[in-house]
Each structure stands twice: as C-alpha cells, then as structure tokens.
Length: 360
Ligand SMILES: C[S@@+](CC[C@H](N)C(=O)[O-])C[C@H]1O[C@@H](n2cnc3c(N)ncnc32)[C@H](O)[C@@H]1O
Image (cartoon, rainbow, N blue to C red; front, side, top):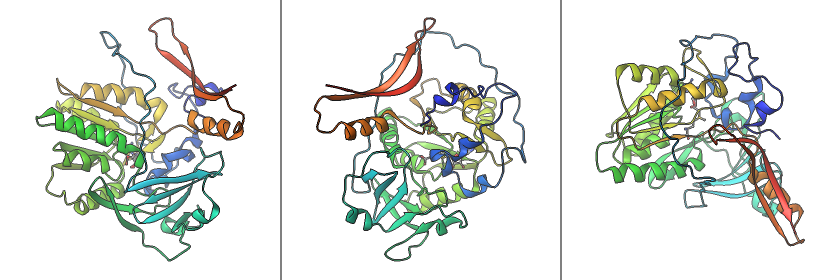
C-alpha cells in the first residue's frame, strides 16, 4: 500500500532534484487516470516543452495561518449520486439513473450488500486494454450510449463512460463546490474564480451559478469541449466562464505578469500530467511553485484557495475499514489516523504513515 507520503519514504529520490528519475508509475495510480485520452498518448520522455526555470521560492513573511486538523469532508448518498457499496476491490455507485461498478483499490474490505445488488449494475468497467473509450465498459442489461444526463444540486450535466474508468465527474468534490458557492454568495460583491486543471467543469458551473466570474483552465481540448457541453446542458451558457486550453503553470505565470487577480483559486492537479505543448506537470516537483503562484494572483481580499491531491493509494479509512471488519465481534474500538512527527523549527507536521489500532 503506498501513500502520497510513501513515495518519498520508500527510498526514491525527491522529485525536486534535477537529476531525479521520473516516477513513471505515478500516472497509473488512482484518479490521475482521469486525464482525457490525448494526454496518455505521450510518454514522459517525448515531446517535452520546457517551462521557464522553476520558480524560486522565498519564505513568506508573517505568522502561519491557524490550523484545523483533521478535517474530513464527506459526501453523503443523495438523489444525484450515491456510493451504494464497496469491497473486494470494487465500488458500486449510483450515478443518476445508472448503477455502475468500477475498480477501487482502497476497498480491501468485504462487500456489505449481497451479490444480487451488484448484479443489478448497468455498467461495469472492464479495463479491457485492447479497447478504447466506451469499449472498456460492459453493459450487462442493455448497451448504453457514451453519455447520460446527470444532475448536481439542480445543475444538469453529462455523465460519461471514459476509457480511464472515470465518468466525467468526481462526486467527492461536491464538498468543495458547496463550500465555494457559500463563500461566493456570502461575499455580496463580484467574485472572480480561477479553476486550474478544471476537467469537465462542474466546479466552474457551480461557481458561475453562484454568481462568480469564472476562468477555467485545462490542458485538454477534449476536456474543455466536454465542459462547454456541460455549460450548455446546465442552461448556464449566459454565465461568464472563460474556457482556456493551456498549461496550468504557464497560465498562472501569465496572470501574475499581467496583474490579473482572483478571489478564489481551485487547483486539482494530477500526479503526472501534460500541458497542451507537452509541458510536463509533476506533482512533487511543480506543486510548491504553483501554490506560490496561486498566492501571488490573489486579490487583496481573497476568499479561498482550494487544493486537492489525489496522489494517494490508501487513506487511513481503508485500513480502518479492514481492521473493523477483521475485529468484528471482539468489542473494543478501532482508532485510525496518521502518524506524524512534529518539527522543532516551525512546528509543522511531517506525516509519515497511516495507522489503525484496535483497542480492547
Ligand atoms: C484530476 S483531473 C481534475 C478534476 C476536476 N478538478 C474535477 O473535479 O472535475 C486533472 C485534469 O488536469 C488536466 N491537466 C493535466 N495536466 C495539466 C497541465 N499541465 N495544465 C493544465 N491542465 C492539466 C487534465 O486534462 C485533467 O482534465
């Protein structure tokens, strides 16, 4: 089981070092596969366009922001989307009208629902490597089209069977969307939102509906096309959204130079990605610079900067569920979380591993 942190703990050199070997497997893990097809066509070594030298990071002055830990943001089953069950390496989800089965590496526990519930699936991701796009899906009841109508909190958009087992939306992001919509409404002033690595645009649509002026950036033309379709579908075509096919880092650098500023920045980068001109994005190497850039392009009275990183293969919830399953019937408590080492210098936490313990 590898985690975001383990990548450095397991002896690989830190990616920030210039001569570092690129972790080729990074793209294969977890949600990074969400990237639309054209990104997969290039290998890390071909067609590279260098970005300018990495940003030199200076220490920011002033006290560290207060902290609130751990914050667990939860999406409960709802009318638009529900995680119906999980276990045995798969998850069973309801996306609008369809029941969908997909692989889920985290689900190392057992299924809770009987087999007949799983057998009612409308679509199963097979991952057939000879196939592309919708061919990698199996439809046990009736053949389905590539897209289907979905809703999020009254916003219509298209679910989509993609070749990367993703379905055009990451429902867990709804926690961020709701939070952002509340911030926009509460601001009672014009709000500018930048959505970097914006994919199919749900966050952009939520922000626009809440009244913000939105700039949506993604390296993939295809993803931007899907996002525009979603805007039409949502009936939000008249809302101010700029759709930009661009490398996220280059775009942010340009905004910094031009003096364009934003009240809210969302960034949801993959572990490994490519800009439209082959610019290489590597999370561990590029995230500090991009985070710094995001700070530099904030308005004087910004509202929020939201970063999501999917580069984890396990969370403490996975080993927690495993331990609870295993110790069923023994009473006691299972406590789970992370092991951290507190730093002497600035009091920051170095997270080293996940843990779960059963205590009688
Ligand atoms: C994990 S998805 C983002 C999901 C999205 N925030 C959501 O919740 O729906 C990653 C996206 O990053 C884009 N991407 C990858 N490398 C990029 C780069 N260098 N610049 C801009 N976008 C990039 C991909 O095309 C893909 O759409």
